[in-house]
Length: 416
Ligand SMILES: [Zn+2]
Image (tube, rainbow, N blue to C red):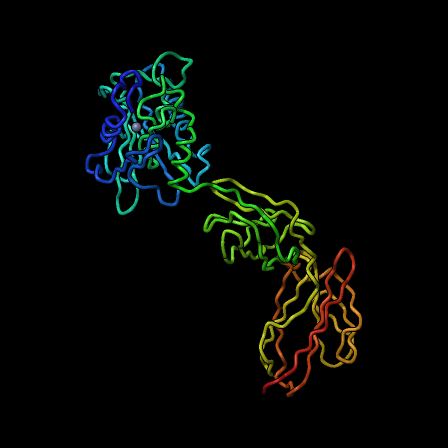
């Protein structure tokens, strides 16, 4: 970018002159919208994934450039303008300081000042493409121009504003024919006005990276499920962008089972923290988090006993799973014949192969149900079990001081 007061050339010459701002080897990939009266132009490609990282060498020598931290803040201010007000799917990541003070086609994107004279050039951006990845450097000429980190500290060019222009090149924009735009080839006065991007600049970054449309929720189905999670939920709405929509239910991240379209995603609910209505949040790294309040209800987990094993046989293990409220104490009894049965902290009266009475005698010797409200136990079918013999299992779960009986689970011996 050049100082405004030196800018006297006709428009087309300005544009050609701007090629100096990119490496000559890249001149062939610089495109200009010749013939358009006022519009952004493009340079050499985009940052794939919509993210650009950079390092800063805060090596301005002018006293009004401020401390290293003030210089860093000023550079970041110029960069952030694009991410904050561009409303595009793009953001910068500032990666810290560096001592690099030369443009080079390496894997670093570096912002630095040089004590050399730039003539009419205030600052310039270098662009490199390596294996489809975009790299850049930004050089401020500190030798024959003075720089301030804030216009209140004295006359000089504005590090942030001119930086905003150069970061525009660094994200893929060329010069604009729009005279008030940040990407106008000459500085807007001392550059402070370059700090805020204009509609034409915004059109440019949105052309390169896409407009950032906030997600919108229309409906979800079903809108309730157990606290243990695992409910498959279809979410309808708009603005669900592939790969960048991370759903949460409450505070917990759900599994994005399938991105169907920008209007439909499928999620599997995570284990919940609280019974009742919970928020669904779509985490969008570009536009922030969008929360749809109180749209999914976690229900208490049913008290349920199931077998996870195939056909039972003598001497084989049967895996029994008990489901209930997370953290609850419990017991499971198995029956064969009749009589009083004491097992794992619970006393069972068994009659006709059915548990007819259970009461806690010690509060439960097993650890409580886990955070998902689950516990799995193995039971060994006796060696002398006969074909078609039935074993009955039943559990009790202590909920709020009450003992709740589970279903009776019948396991029949179906192989020898
Ligand atoms: Zn420029």
